[in-house]
Structures are given as structure tokens and as C-alpha cells.
Image (cartoon, rainbow over all chains, first blue to last red; front, side):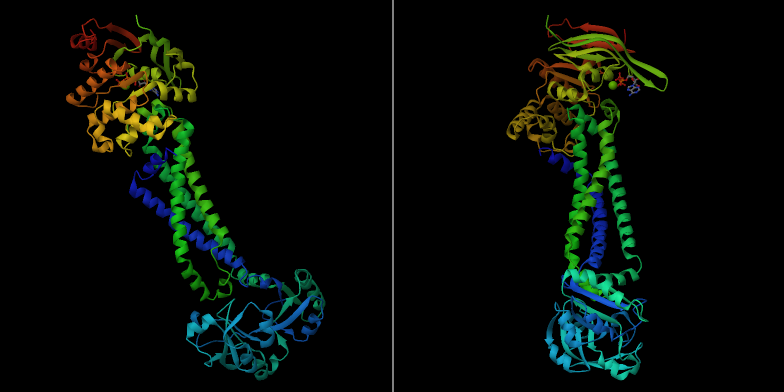
Length: 385
Length: 248
Ligand SMILES: Nc1ncnc2c1ncn2[C@@H]1O[C@H](COP(=O)(O)OP(=O)(O)OP(=O)(O)O)[C@@H](O)[C@H]1O
Ligand SMILES: [Mg+2]
């Protein structure tokens, strides 16, 4: 403890250099936190645990293939199935193809949807009003804000997969999960497009228990294995991660970038510590002459290096905390909004970030520290510096 | 006859580079009595610094024995030597070698940090040491805010902070102007006379050597001359020192 002033004053021996070094740790640390949080967000469960009991059934080949509505009854008969509903991807265009006009649009079964996604709350209008209007829309709160819509406003979705233009009226607003989505009665499509009748994109199942979640996928897929429309059944989580892997191997890329950044911090701090130690060869020899032992010298230099990286990490942490709300807001309004609800200050990400940074500080300090402690005292004293 | 503090017996110091062996000290023997003030002279490269380092226990001889007080420093391990130095030897360097980021007070406190003294006791000892060198009013100054002479006085305060019996000084006035150098020498004399320190001082300057009570002349790693003062005050005197320095 009594050596603290020496370590602190040594650290700021070259003030500009120390500040620059700390900054060069702060920024990469910040980026690592952002990337790590994005990765963790992809893994997180935006439904707050409710999604654990949901399963998704789709055509084995791809999401672009339909399966027959008649499957519903056979699925519903399986033990452990509490509820089955249909969600059909509508696609289409709102106004134009600019990214800010992209959002998810689904044909659904209104009464059943709210039962299966029971973590979602209606914050304006009512589920009943929505369900009773064939052209009614349930719209995410965030999308309402984006377009300045109010209950009763209408908008047009130009169809592409389904050759119709849907004019929908906002009847209810929801909060929770992907708040940029629009949901409407699938019958609106079926009634206008004859071939769409009885065609299902995905069945969403609410399972009764964790055991059912385990066993149902195999049971369901076995039912339809030899039919003309074989299925693939997954948990909600697996289904969503399927989209992530469609984005390419995001995780590997992000992990790679983070590792590279950590290495950059390592090189920068190692260089600073090496420079600091080199400038201080004589001083260290003098300290040892006074009776400072090798291990004490080693400790002092490592403490300095650790302090440098710790300062960087904590400043970076503060910066990240401050900018976190803006980051989340940005993600929630992006096409990745489906995942953003699960975004939070993941402790494991922050702990890993700080851990890596401190480790880097330790590794960066250790070589110059050992070298300084090893050098013979007369050699160190002879060096004029 | 006073009892000996330093006993150097047949000390050889060699440096080996590749296959070449450089013998810096060649079978040197020397005894220094407790409370003596010894000047070590000799041409550049004659091994003065090397000898001083051996006495002070920051280097070890290739062969031979060195005893300081009860300690056989030539046989001690590194850790034990470090502890021994912190208690028994004070160092004064030509270039002062203060830690630039620490104040005068903190510099003098450095060796005390290795003791078990309380903060209060450390403060008392630092203040005493800075008082002895006459810099009580400069405690919070950084080295760059001090003159060379003042820096060297802080360095001397650091050397006496733990109250060691032996002080070694390697050209303590070598980097100072005549007036500051004179002040340092007066201070060393006081430490010797008033506080009973044994002092071994390397110097090129006959005027500095003249203050000592014994003058040892090294040349090419062997003892060439060893003069003991006979004057009233026990000093070598300028004339004798100059003659020896000239290698007469
Ligand atoms: N680590 C080393 N490796 C090789 N040679 C060394 C080493 N240290 C000292 N020497 C040599 O030992 C000899 C004596 O050096 P030393 O520093 O003791 O001389 P000195 O008498 O103090 O000289 P000066 O008056 O110039 O300070 C010199 O020739 C020097 O080059
Ligand atoms: Mg020398």
C-alpha cells in the first residue's frame, strides 16, 4: 500500500503518453463491448423465457415452401400440444424498398396469436377490435412511432408473393418482442387470393411442458416424414438462430474481430510498458540498490501496467453504459429488431471485456517487468539515462 | 587501533566476453576501519566503481572474500543482500539518481518503505535526514525544481535515512560546480565526524580526496598506494592528494 504513490506517479510520468495509451484501450474496449453485446443479444431470449415453450413447424426444404393447413389437426392431437396457430409471411412493400420502410408483416389468426404470445401486451386499442376487423392491423409500438400512426389510420401493403394490395387499418398496438411488426388476419389474403387458401408458412405451437418441447419436434416431423410436404420443427430459439446463420457466420466474424482488437490493445500496452521500462533502467537499478527486491520491482511494474489497462477498461465501460440506450434504440429500429428486445448490459460480456483487458495489461507488463528485475544492478547503474 | 568494518581478501573480479577474460580487480586486499573516511582514486577504468559496488554488495567478486561488519557479502544470496543493503549501506551517486516523479520527501522515504516503520516514524526520519542536509524547506520540491547541489543533498538524505553505518559515494562531486561540490564535501565530513559514518568515496578530484583521512590509489586493478593522514585534523591534505593523483 505504501508503494501506491510511486506506482501512480510513475504511471503519469509521461502524461500525454499515458493518456493516449489509456484512450487506445478505451476505444477498442468499447468496440469489444458493443460486438460482444450484439453476439449475446443474438443468443438471448427476447421473450423473457416465454419462448422456451414455443415450437415452429415449417416445410423441411425452406420457408418459401408451404405446408397444408390440414396438418394442424394432426399436430393438435399430440399430447403436450396446448395450442397451434398459423403465421404466414406476407412480404410485400410499404411505400418503397428503402430500409426504413422494411418491417415484418404476417397473416395470422388474431385470437390464437395473443394466446400463444402471451408476453406481448396491447397498449392501445383492443385485441377484440382488431380480431373483429378483417382488415385490421396489430402494429408494434415502435413502428407506430416511426410513422406517427394513430389508431384508425390506414396504410397499404403492396403484395409480391401474394398478388394483392392490402389496405389495413390500425386497430391495436402491442409492446414486447419485435415492436416493428404488423399482424393481420390471414383470411384477408385467402379471400383475395384463391390459391393461398389452406397454405401455411409456419405453425406456431405452445407446448405444455419442457418435456413436450423436447419430444414434440421429433414426433411432429415423424408424422409427415413420408408425405409430399415433410416438415421441420424447431424451438423458437433455433428458428430465430436460423435467420442469424442466414446472415452468414456472424459469430465467427465478430469473434474474430474482437480477438484482433484484443491483440491490438496487447501490442499497444506492451509497447508502452516496454518503453516505460527502458527509460527507467537506471531508476530501477537505483531502487534495487536501495534494497528493493526483484519481486517487489516485478510487482510495481505489473501494478502499473494493470492500472493502465484497468483505467482504460473502466473508462470504456462508462462510455459503453452511457451510450447503451442509444445503441439499443438503434437496433430496435433496425431490421434486426426481432433480436433487439433481448439486448441488455450482459454482465458476462462486461466481465469478459474487463477480464481480457486486465489480462492484456498483465501480459503486456510481464516481459519488461521480468527484464528489468533480471538485469544486474551495476549494468543498470552504468546505463546513463 | 579501531576495529575493521570492511575486510577485502584477495578479491578478483573478471568479466568474460566470448573467450576474452578481462581482469578488472586482480587479487586486491584492503581493510577499512570503522569510522574511517577513505578516498578511492585512480585513473579511469582502474576498477574504482567495481570495487565500490563489491563493497556495497550490489556486485559479487569472481574470487576472494568480502566482509562488511558481520556479513560476508561475497557469499550472500541476492535476496539477503538486498535486505542487508537496505539496512547497512547508503549510496551516493555522481548523477544523484533521484526518482524524478517523486518529491524530495518521497525520494528520501523510499528506503524507509522497506522497513516496518509506521507512517509517522517514517515521516520523522525523513524530516531528520532532510534537516541534516539543510533542506527542510524543500521537502515538497521535485528534483527538477532543485539545483544540482540540492539534488545531491537530497540523495545524501536518502542515503542516511535508514541510518546505515557505511556510506559509499561514487564521484559525488563529479557533476557539480566548485561551490556546490564544496558544500557536499563539508556535509560528508560532518556525517563522518558528527555521526560516525564510515565513508568510502571514489573521486578524481584531489581537492575532494584531500578531505579524506585515508587515500587509496588503484591502478589496473591493484592497490598502488595507501596513504594515511598524519595532520592535526586527520586530513590527507591537498598537496599529498595531488601528488598521489598525479601518480608520483
Ligand atoms: N559489465 C562489464 N562488462 C565488461 N567490462 C566491464 C563491465 N563493467 C565494467 N567493465 C570494465 O571494467 C573496468 C573497470 O570499470 P570501472 O567502472 O570499475 O572503472 P572506474 O575506475 O570506475 O572508471 P571511471 O573513473 O571511468 O569511472 C573498465 O575497463 C570497464 O570497461
Ligand atoms: Mg567509475
